[in-house]
Length: 147
Image 1 (cartoon, helix red, strand yellow):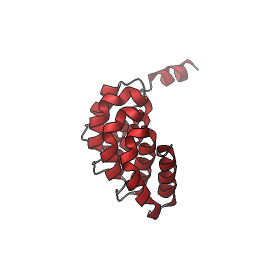
Image 2 (cartoon, rainbow, N blue to C red; image 1 turned 90 degrees about the horizontal axis):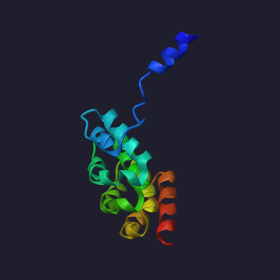
Image 3 (tube, rainbow, N blue to C red; image 1 turned 90 degrees about the vertical axis):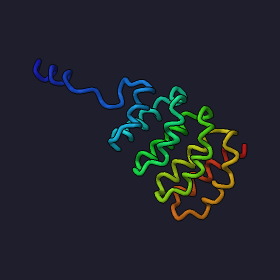
């Protein structure tokens, strides 16, 4: 029994546990796409506390890996109005070839609040998107931005 308890205590901490925004931002700049994706996901969990990482997250929206782009959009949305400088980059992400990135960018724009009004025309274009989840996310964000 004691051996089991000792082994349980020796496990490494999960990669997202106990890290600061600056540590997650460093992960975002790693050469390893899996680490980059974890860094963006970690920043998404910090919400507005990750506002300092907005420029790095904007850069990550251009990453070659879908999961990094998706998690970066997630983080920007969770940061909220403090990520208003990402409106143009998120609007560009609405044309991403991957539907998961388009959907997450649409959701994020709705979370940025009034500063994302400039994205309304780009969100409206998604009413023709082939993916229903993208269309629904765009509709939800449009409703939030119009109020």
